[in-house]
Image (cartoon, rainbow, N blue to C red; front, side, top):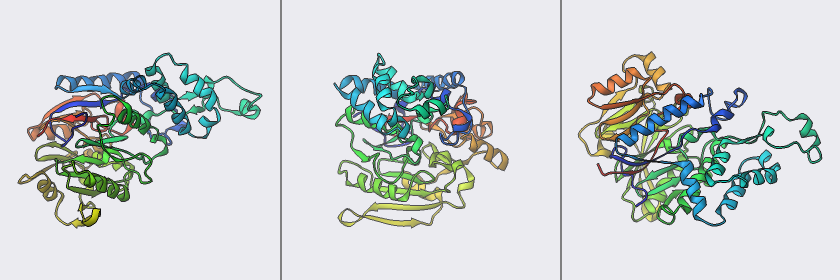
Amino acid sequence: MPICVNSEIGSLKKVLLHRPGRELEYLVPGELERLLFDDIPYLAVARREHDTFARILRDQGAEVVYLEELMAETLRAVPGLRDRFVRQFLAESGGTARRYADELYEMLMAEESDLALVERTMSGVSAAALPDDGAKSPLVSLAKNRRRYILDPIPNLYFTRDPFACIGRGAALNSMYSATRRRETIYGEYILRYHPDFAGKVPLYFDRDYPFSIEGGDIFNLSRKVVAVGISQRTTPEAVETLSARIFADEESSVRRVLALDIPSLRAFMHLDTVLTQVDRDKFTVHPEILDDLRIYEIVPGEKGGLRVRERRESLERVLAEALEVDRVTLIRCGGKDSIASEREQWNDGSNTLCLAPGKIVVYDRNYVTNQLLRSQGLEVFEMPSSELSRGRGGPRCMSMPLQRLPV
C-alpha cells in the first residue's frame, strides 16, 4: 500500500520532502507579498537546515523521498509524459508564460535530464534568461524590467504538507487558496496518477480543479475513524463538506467522522497546524489565542449519501479525547503563560511540530520556551536549526508529508 496514514503520531516510516532550491533565490522584495513570503531566506543556510531535518527523520527510522526526484521518476516512467507535463505547466503559469510559451517550451524540453527539467519549472525563469525579440514584441523589448519573471518561481514548495494530503490509504489533491501556489499541485497530480508506485493504487478524495480551496496544513488524521479539518484562511467549509462526502463514499475507508475546527481567518493562523498539532497519544500543542473563538462541528454520513452536521459545544479537550478514545487530553500552550513568548513563538511555528512516534517530535530550536514545556511533559524533543526556513512561515509539520505511518 503506497499510502497508509491513519494517525498523526504513528511511527513515521516514509515521508515526502522538498529540498529548497533556486526558487528561493528568485525572491525579490517587490514580489514577497504576492509569493507569500515575509522575508528572503538565505538558500545555502536553508539547505543546511533542511538537510539536518532530513537527517533527524532518517536517524529515527523514516525513509525520506523528495518531491523533485519522484516527479522526475514519473516523467521517465511514461513515454510522452514529459511533453504533456511541460505544456500543462506552461498553460497554468499565467499570461506572461503563455505569451512566451514557445520559447519556454523549447528551453524546458532542452534540459538534459528529467530532474533538471523539474527543478527548472520549480525555480522559474526570469526575463533575462530569454533573448530579446524586438520584432515580435518591440515595446516589451524596450520597456520590460530585466528582473521580471517570465515563468514565476514556486518558493513555497518546501512546505510539502499543503498541495496534497494523505488520508488513510487515499489522498486529497488539494485546490490551493492562493494563485501563486496552485501549480504546486501539478506535481502531486502527476505522481499520484502516473508514478509506478502510486498509479491506480490511491483513491482521491479531492481534486485540484474543485472550486473551493483546501490545503493539507488543515487536514489531521486523528485515528482510523476520525479526521479533523480546519476551516481557516485557506480552507473553506464548502471544501470540508466535499472532502467529507468523498471519504464517506469510499466503502474501504474506515473514517466515519470528520471534525471541522473553525479557527480565525488570519495569516498568522493560516492553517490548523500553525495553532494545533498532536505530539503524543493524549497531548497536543496549542496556541492559546484560538481557544476562546474556536467552534467545532461534527460531520457524519447522512441518509442517501448526504451529511449530518452538528455543532459540538464541549471543550476542545473533551472533543479530542472522545475522538482518540482516551480519558483526557492535555493541551500544551505555545509559550506557556507568557503572552509575549506565546505570540512570538507561535509566529515562528512553536505549535507546528512533526511527530515521529508517540511522544517523539521535531521542533524548531528557536522556540525555546515552548520546547522546554514539551520536555517537562515527558516528550522527547528533537530540535532543528531554523533561522532561514522559518522565514517562510511554516514549521516541521508544514515541511513534511507523511506517506506511511505504523499503526498506533
